[in-house]
Image (cartoon, rainbow, N blue to C red; front, side):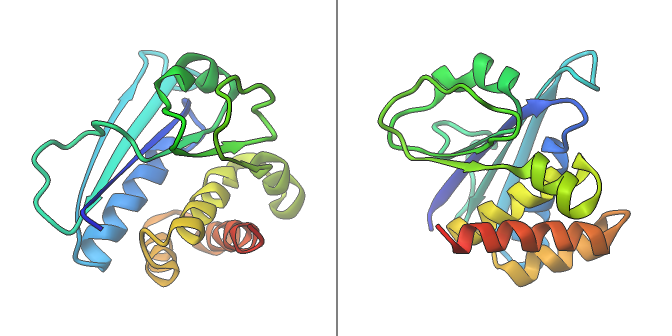
Amino acid sequence: MVRTEIRIVGSGGQGAITMGELLAKTATVYEGKIATQVMSYGAKVRGGDIWTEVVISDEEIDYPGAIDADIYIFLSQEAVDKHEGEVKKDRTVIIDSSLVNKWSVESMKIYQVPASELSEKELGSNLYSNMILLGFLVALTGIIKRETIIKAVRETVKYPNINTRALEIGFALADRE
């Protein structure tokens, strides 16, 4: 791996920033890679437009943001409506299919993960959908190890057991792909 760029887009309160922070922290602290994370959120944080970009590399990173993201994760239909035009055909796209029902870019491999629905059904709240998507990303791409993201979650988040369970749901979904 030379440089992998990930762009996560959603609405405030969906956990996009947390996903980016955990990816960058896991890559640097637990795996010794070089990583950066940049983010932007609207003035109205809860419900406003949110995005974060994570760059993970084995070599020095000369620009901290995504120049041409390899992987996109969309957490809401609003995010898709606003940002899908940025995605090139050959990129990996992961969407929360519980909340995204329309995608217009053709001939692209899209992973549809019903994260919000599974979070509600399996964990009693849709608050953990971001961790399901994060687990899916990790298992699908191998960009970081499953063990290290679990360790980072256990040491970082407020409710480590339920968040770890959410990661494991995401791992299992990706293993079926």
